[in-house]
Length: 322
Ligand SMILES: [Zn+2]
Image (cartoon, rainbow, N blue to C red; front, side):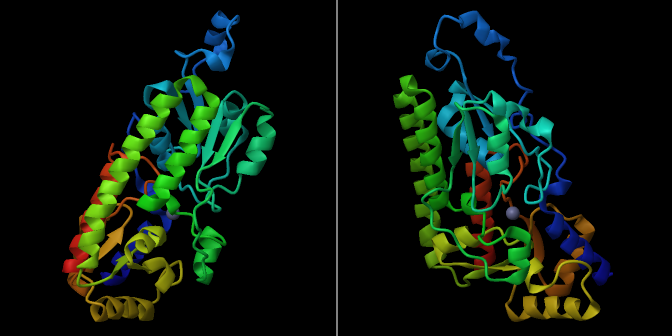
């Protein structure tokens, strides 16, 4: 049943990462370690104790990854949006924000990804909190598609999926950690440069591959790859954007198949592994296969940021050759 299968696929695309169940324990952060420990070192100035970890609150998984890359064992990170939760629609409850009242640093990505941060910062009532909009200084992509504006707001928020964007975010995070813990400035600077070197290696590797690619566009469920495409001169076609949300009509299904055939689409990317039945049916209908692609909006498959982005780039590259 093609119709059911595609409806399912659209459903997967629409809910994005919700289906994720295997959350890596490394990404879920233990509930706030009691701050009583700090009372033992009352005499010392809290932020200057070099062996105490810096408490960092982050909004979602990509921010966890960047803070971890720079802060490593000198930071204790708590993620506000739980893995497996749709991050674009997330509205924090009071208990989600408890950690902000004692955190030293709060990292969010910005560009409308987390519309709730201003209120959260106000209600944290924590004058020492260093709040960082990680995307600050990056050039946003303005949304033009009405469906995208409805779903994601004025700007495309997915800056962290760009290696160039990640570089900016990591630098802003490093500056905040240095501000919070200047005694370990060299440590954060070194980790930051090491991570940026890895981002640049990946970029260089794929830049030459994409320059030589036969095709320059790919099809994905959720339009999360605008910045990645900007980096490499590629184009994403989102199933959500081409076809309105909700149950597609028979006519829309025909159009989907037609679009894929006309554009010689060999791969349709989806944020979550669609059931093998859906993949097989769709692959048969349009002569394509369904491949999982990572958005790093949630912890996925216990993989790091670099592993997930490299996986995405490898799969996108393969689909452009096909
Ligand atoms: Zn998204």
